[in-house]
Image (cartoon, rainbow, N blue to C red; front, side, top):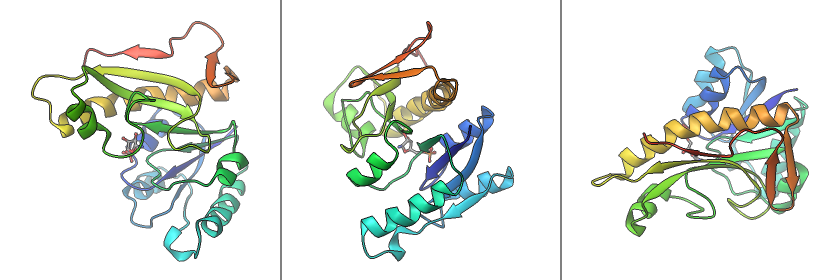
Length: 204
Ligand code: GRF
């Protein structure tokens, strides 16, 4: 019934998962200086570090990471600000049971610096997406999205903070659906059994 969470930094999404009392059995980081490791440890959650820099290749790093993940036999692997590009082999190893949270309304703005790019593009709405991980970066069947307005005078920081509040709402919800066996992947779409909304519109 458990979830392994992968982080690289601050760990606020990971913390939201813990706050939601999801069954997180371990938090693993590719960086020993990730701030989220201390937050997890303070809450009694086992932590581990698999430093990508210690491995000669991406494949070797992923082998070690996979071994560490599998020690906990998780049902789901949740990427929460995990800043490594994954090989197709690694995505395949956890196909249908690895999710990511991304700070944009995918398919808009995959990749980095989403808030700056959204402001530069002049979009009226922005947001965040939880999706299953597939080999293509920031693609994969969408589980849930939350939209926020872009306000006049927004800075990337202000917009990022508004989006992050929604990330902390939708990621726990997506994981709960998965653990409750309510998600059905149908091609490039995900259906949630029942009547829960898969698009939230925030007026924050
Ligand atoms: C979040 O915006 C997440 O969507 C993105 O990286 C950021 C991680 O923040 N993938 P945190 O480490 O969860 O605080």
